[in-house]
Length: 114
Length: 114
Image 1: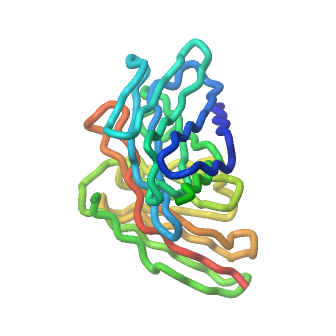
Image 2 (image 1 turned 45 degrees about the vertical axis):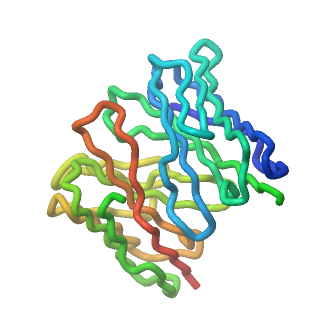
Image 3 (image 1 turned 120 degrees about the vertical axis):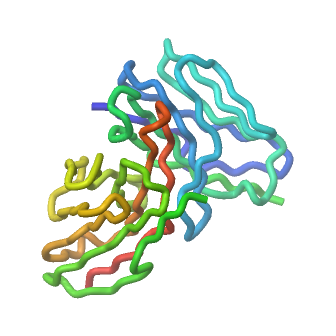
C-alpha cells in the first residue's frame, strides 16, 4: 500500500523567512496531494492541493510543487508569519479509489519565531 | 466551513466500557471517515463509509465498529474500550462529485480511557 514520508518533523524559522516541507510517496498511481494545517487543539484544515497533471500551484504565500518522477511533493511558505505556526500534514490519494485511500504523512511542526 | 458536528467533544471512560462517538454532516456528502490522531503517527484511518449501510475497514480497525443508517450520521463504537484507544478522533467527509475531492474534518473528540 501507499506510504507517505514527511520531513522535517520539526522546523523553526525566523519571521519573514521561507519554510519548506517535503513529502515522498511510494505508490506511483497516487494522483492527488492535499496539504493540511492544524493549529493546536483544532481540526486539520485544507490549505492547498495539487493534482498529478500539474507541476506547481500557488496561493498567495503558499505554493506546492510536485515531481512525479521522483515521487515527491513539497510545501513552500514564503514571508512566514507567527500565525503560520502549526502542524502541517501532507497526504496522497489515488483518484480511482474515490476517497477511501488518503494516506497522511506524520506531520511537521512549524514554529515561526518573531 | 463544511457542516460537520462531532459529539461528544470530550469523554473520559473506564477500561472495558462501550463508547459511541457520533458524526453528523449537513453537506449530503457520500463519503464519511473516522480517523484517530496520535503523536508521531499523524492521522490513521479507522473505518470509512461510501454510502448508507456501506462501510469498510481502514488500517487501524481492530477494536472498532461503525454504522451508517442515514446519509448524515456515521457512528464509531468502541465495544470494550482499552487504554490504547485513548486518542483524538476526527470524523471527515468528502464529495464524490468532484474527482480527487479533499477531506473536510470535524472538530474532533478527545477520548480518554482510564
